[in-house]
Image (cartoon, rainbow, N blue to C red; front, side, top):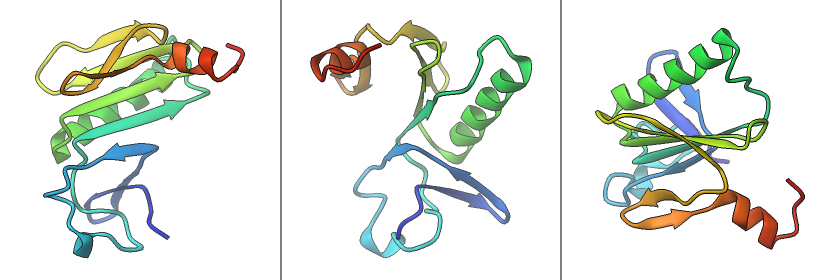
Length: 125
């Protein structure tokens, strides 16, 4: 079993939902049963409960995003199912919040549209 998440330093681990790594940085010898000690290029976090108007919830999002950036991640995407929003946080750039029915750039011109995907799959929104 491989844990999805990162080991930042002693007693400082972050679990993650979907992490995308550069293959050249995540060699097979770095994959084991522990948290990975390599920063993801992109972290995708999916949350069904966060209330963006709640200061504590929003603080959690900000803290985790900054920890990922400090560790070396380039982009963090937060998918908020409750609000059908996607927050796109790119290091050293303004963060964007979009409706999930809009095109979101994942990597170098590769886009996705969560709302469209769900509609195509017959998932009620």
